[in-house]
Length: 205
Image (cartoon, rainbow, N blue to C red; front, top):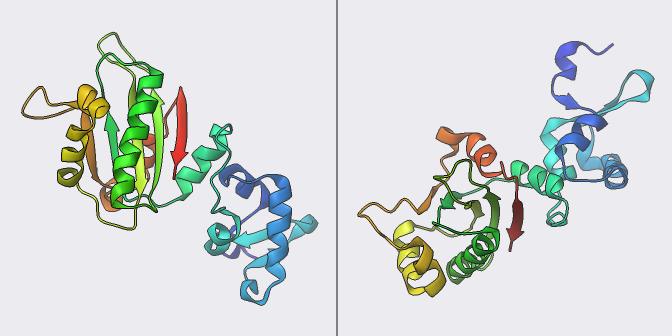
């Protein structure tokens, strides 16, 4: 008999499909790996034949390295939430539309690529909530190299499109925010803040 404490760290099929960006077919294929010696002791079959899998191996088993299809934003959202991000930021350019924000992100991505070619950038475009706001873009970056605003900002100023929409008008520039993702301070809230898109999102590698 398995007590509740033993169940606490195990997850079922429904939990996994709700939180991981995989299909039922992919789930079935990946579950077969539980027969390998390295996963011995990480799964159990309980009442009515339900399989439970220990949460410590879920990401290794079910988080795909491949980016989800860009036409499936619900799967992108799951993938983003389950990954670890190193930097967070946003653009708040004045008087722009969705397409302009997409172009700004692409140009910004080129700058990041000059520093770290293996980096990954997730972006989401949010619509204005009031007449005083404009379309703006949230982003998260996964990088193997240190990035800093002081290094990135001069490169933005050299880019005609980015400089046009993000240039300083005041001593403190509120149009471009960029900082290290502080996991202790933010927890998952920074990711939740960044994926609250309702217009367009994407992942750039």
